[in-house]
Each structure stands twice: as C-alpha cells, then as structure tokens.
Length: 411
Image (cartoon, rainbow, N blue to C red; front, side, top):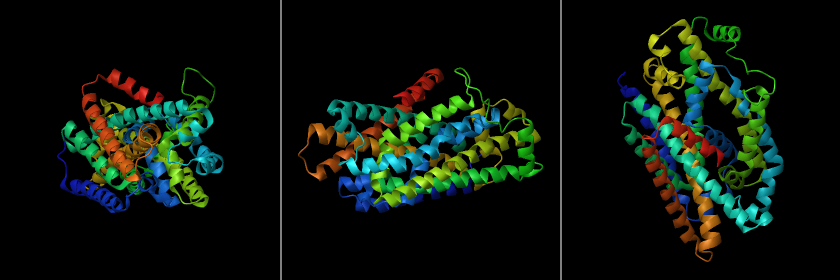
C-alpha cells in the first residue's frame, strides 16, 4: 500500500471545506419549509441543471463505467442515450404541468388528484423505501474504495461521510444541496479530465493510439445490434434507457423538486437543456477512462493489475500511478459522486415524509415552523438509518449485497 500523500490530503480537505462553507452559507436563509424544500422557488436554471447531472452519477458509476469499458467495451453507454431525449420531453410537456397543478412540493400530490389518497400514500411510501435503500448502499459502496485509497478504517469513512453530508444538507436545505451539487459536478468533470490526461501522456502514441487500438480490438464497440432477451444488446439497453429515465424524470421526487425550485419556465428550460447536453459527454468521459486504462496496461503490463477485479483497476491506478495532488482531485471526485446522490435523497425523502404523511395525514393544522422542525428531524432519522445500515452491510455476503442493490432499484 502506497502511503497517503500530504498534498492529496490538502486537496480532499479543500473540497470538504468548500462544501461545508456552502452548507453554512445557505443555512442562514432556511426559515420556512418552502426555503428548505424549494429554495423559495428562486434557484437559477444553470445551478439546477448541474444538480440534476451530478445526482444521476454516484461513486458506483464513477468507478463502474471505467471498469466496464476496461474489461469489455462501451456497450452499456447506450443505457444513457435517452437521458437528453427524456429531459427535453420533460421540460416541454411534463414539468410545466407539475408547476401549474402542484400546490405543495411533493409530486405525489398529483396522484391524489387523479387517483385518490391511497394511491398518493402508496407512491410516497414506495419512494421513501427506495431512497432509504439507495442511501445506505451508495454510502457503503463509496466507502469501500475510499477506505482503500485513504488507508482508513471502513467504519470511520462511513460515519464521517454520512455525518458530513447530513450536516450540510440539514443546515442548508435544497439550496445547499443544489449549489454543492454544482461544486460536485465540477469536481466530477475535473477528476475525469485529469485522469484521462494523466493516462494519455504516458501511453505511447497518446490519444490517437488509444482510439486506433481500441477500434482494432473492438473496445469502443456499442455491442450487438439485434434484439435479444438474454444478452445486453443495443436495442434491449435502449429500451431499458427509455423506461429508466422516464421513471426518473417524471416520478422521482428529487427531480420534480428541482422543476418546482426554479422561478419560471425560462429557467426550467435552461436547466433541462444544460443537463441534457452535458450528460452523454460526461459519461463518455468515464467510459473513455476505462479504454485508456486498457491501453495503458497493454503498453505497460503489470502482473498485480492482471489479478485484480475490473472494479479495482481504476482505484489501483489512482493509488499507484497518479502524481500527488492529481490523485487528491480524483479521490474528491469519488466522494463528490456519492455525496451529490446522498444529499439529494436525504432532502427529497424529508420532503415526502413531511408533506405526504405528516402534513397531509397526521398534523394538518400545525405551523410552518413545526413542519420545518419535522423536516430536519426526518433528515436526521434517514441519515441515522443510512449510516447504521451501511455499517451493517460490511458483514453482508456479496451475493446478498447484490440482491440488496437490485431491490433498491426495483422498489
């Protein structure tokens, strides 16, 4: 294990300080539930666009995309092809309807209007359960590579990261979540870019050689084009992409919250245009990292790397090949990918529990200050579940953990 370098410590610490500063700054303006859940409906479109992009990524995809293209090809890249299409569809047809018809900050109010209270509560409960499962798996799967890269105990990484995300998201509400997501999106893009550059400058022939050899060995292929119920081919993955992003953009509270948080339709179009235009180039960047790693270790074979699982190749490169400071930027990117997912889920879960259960069913005649206290209490409770469950997952067999992840995606 290479000792952790002091310059990388400073880079990661700088990222955390900036994030904490944003949370502290926006904590001053959170005096109502509308501030906490919707940022007073005054968030700029460019910030919301970056936030939508960064919440779609997690540390799992940050490391899994390069692993896929390293060991196979770009066949899973088509999984995201419908992202820009659905974002345009949502901006033009779906989000304006939500902005016009919803009186609260919850998308599940729409279900009650159309189908009754029971349907609203069922949809809200299903979302809350899925987000709780997503929170603990995201935290745990981020902590595993981070603990290896920092040479830190896994429980310490889980507790510190979970508590850190909880503090700034509870203090600053959706405004802190969105603006920290902007920072995290920048860190994500920067970490991906510096990784590619660091690899290309060392590969003989640089980018041209990587592309040329990648084409020769079908490493840039999108896979087979015929329909198959058994294989991951282009048509089947495209079908999944359409369903997945339609569900995310139309039914997920964390997405609809952002549609309601912008001041007008012009800002909404700006947000959806930005996220739609950046999505595919961003994911292409991380798939290209895997192709570059394949070319690098083809030029410089390493017996130790040959024995690694694909998911461990990129972390190994970060740890052993990147210079001081650069590695810190990439580690910050892994943290940013997970934190942008967790802070959004915490705030969205809090909004659904407060609006759809506490305010709608339990105590409907309380003051707004009461509901704001409830929102922070729910965030704290969800965070406690997230951290404690992530600690338990350390002792879950891998087969069971995979089933847990599958369940969190299906709920």
